[in-house]
Length: 187
Ligand SMILES: [Zn+2]
Image (spheres, rainbow, N blue to C red):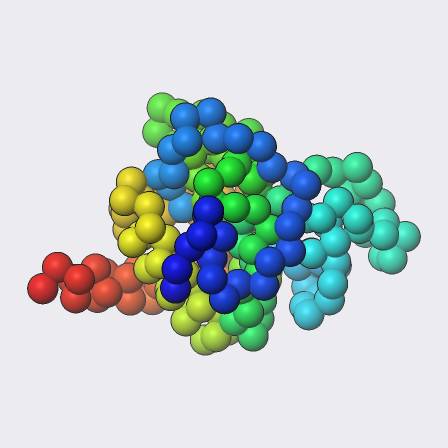
């Protein structure tokens, strides 16, 4: 999986206007999220619309609260494993909000945001784990300041506000696979 100007080969490109420059150009943290629109519903076009700034807020009563919200992520991984990319990894997407990693605030400045289509309670699909692992491996290879130690959930950098990716995300399964891969690279 190659990258060109921060765009991942093979991902469906769905450009968002919700991005700007990274102040230091740094990419050193990966943030895992979940999203579903409406909550608990999968396979609908609303996540693309939200990140592209064209969500029809009349489509569902719960969308009223999303009116005017300018958010994005670099990637979405759908239930069938499809990868969608909204913002170049070289640019700053708007996924983390008020956040802190160690001593550093504003994690959007230096992180890549990956959304999993899902909820805090519903298990993610095998296709999603496979797709996420392959994408993470490609990102680790492309951005040397990333590492398996620098992968967090949104809940870790905004603990008072956010719970995603939730108890439904199997961190052990994900990180084990990544470590196997990293060891293969070293041997
Ligand atoms: Zn999140």
